[in-house]
Image (cartoon, rainbow over all chains, first blue to last red):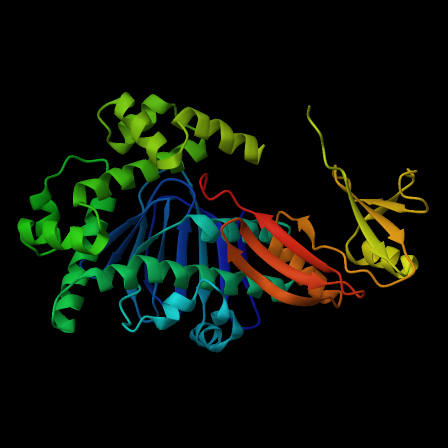
Length: 290
Length: 121
């Protein structure tokens, strides 16, 4: 079922399915892109970001991009578009006094916002509640705007954790160098996220991010507190978690789909990350949603 | 031994207004079942296991905070705002989930909690 909602303040929400589609978009607003199955590609200039259900992308106003879905199987998508006025009003509002935004407000550097963020925690809960309200077809604009303000609270907290803090971890004397290196590390992260189920070498990641392999390894660890390989393992576990939620695949199939070589190492890594074995996690999730 | 906590006792000095608040604002229904333990007490339920017992008393009493669980804090916060409820704390994030606080007309504090299991999601 396709749902399109345009509010009086011009914020829009579109929920529906896509398959075999390619479209060029000139973004006018702040646009959150979320999918609930499969993957969707976003080509922004030379940069390619592949979106999976465990992540979301925020596209900034003025971005020109190509959006592409290759699969025949329809993928469920959600797009939330917020006007620049809504976002600037939010930044001036009492919402900014929320206990989780203090750290964001205190950070100095304004950095690029356009990248992939984990679709987890409060962002996930609020979006799922918003989806439920949209499907009830109740025309309560104030309530929808309340959810949208909370989506922004969740986003700015993630931005602080994923961008501002990591940027602050880099110890270059010149701010311009720091920004340049951080931009390249974001490309490295995106390369790993896009190719998580393929076999690749650190040199491939280095080449995609225009850094030498040694420089990449050193600065990646410095910024993110973990090696590129450890980050790849986290991405694979997170994708496995999303596939378990989907409930369509067996554990053995998931191990193959996300690029792990052995079921036993997958089970032990999953348990140490999420406190439950994959099978128990699958049961818990489906008990919750039943 | 496995004990269960079923009733929260709320002492009020105007049982009629308190009944109206629980019924019309919070959506509880009066349970016809009477409890001898609380003489003259009214039992309210919203279909869940836990119940509220209103007990009238002569003087103003400060009750402990009443915790109400919800599956969508933002929706219920908005719905209560529409009904004229004054919130002392707008929905904000804690390690247990999303939480908001409001007062009833008699000054009792209610906490609206949407529990969130961050380990699963």
